[in-house]
Length: 339
Image 1 (cartoon, helix red, strand yellow):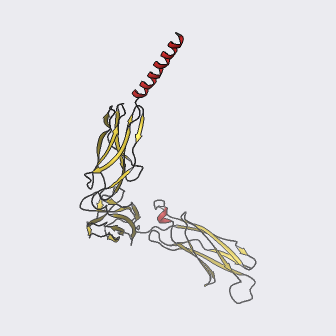
Image 2 (image 1 turned 90 degrees about the vertical axis):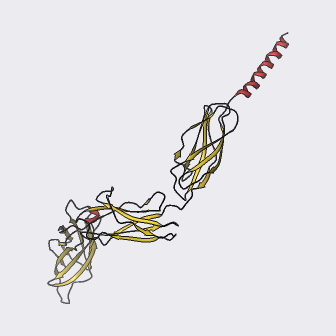
Image 3 (image 1 turned 90 degrees about the horizontal axis):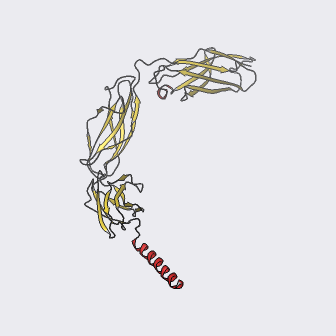
């Protein structure tokens, strides 16, 4: 009797396990399908989902890389045990551009991600654009430059500019014929700007359809009028060099007005000149560093002149050369002695 009961219990257990396996649900099965109705800005994405017996939602991901970046709105795939076809329309796409996409489905047992696939939207890619430097800057104007690649379609371009990165002003639109070669473009703002003002600008280009392409923001400052005079402070050491070669080190600073940004103020060159009487016997030119300091050595291999003097007293004149942003000025005159 015990043996029969044991066999009967084992049979029930085995049957229960088999039934449990048959009834158990799992994460959905997913296949990323193809595309249809691809336009310049939209595409219908297709795929299949098997909910595997549990309430399942699905959505598509798409983007310019396999990082995607855009998730479609989640949709219900039901709770059945059969494969169903699903689709979703990707919108806001860029013409003539490759996109990656995949199907994702999830239920209480987990999430399944379909394989990556790709398609390319219809039409020409947006024009390629790069904002160039501002040239010919003066007190009331500048010339803006950049490059545009039409990418196979007739293209319109212009510059946006203004005293902030919101711009507010733009140049008259200009056209480029269809082509695939990068073209240099430029626009003069001479006589249109205010002195001593920082301006933002960027190049913008577009086709008749599709979103515009914008270059990076650039900045420049028009020259102040009148140009402020900076302070110039310098020290040349040692005050006396006893032995040849006679080496002197000149260090100093240029002090611009506080309202002038350092990227415009801390630029330019200085001359360091040594005079014996009225005759120049030494000359060095040095660039101003981004922190408005300068330093330069001057070396005399021997005493200046042809006499038999055992020493020479020299006058040191240090001058900051004018730039578009600052007037020229000089440091107080110093004297050094050789020998």
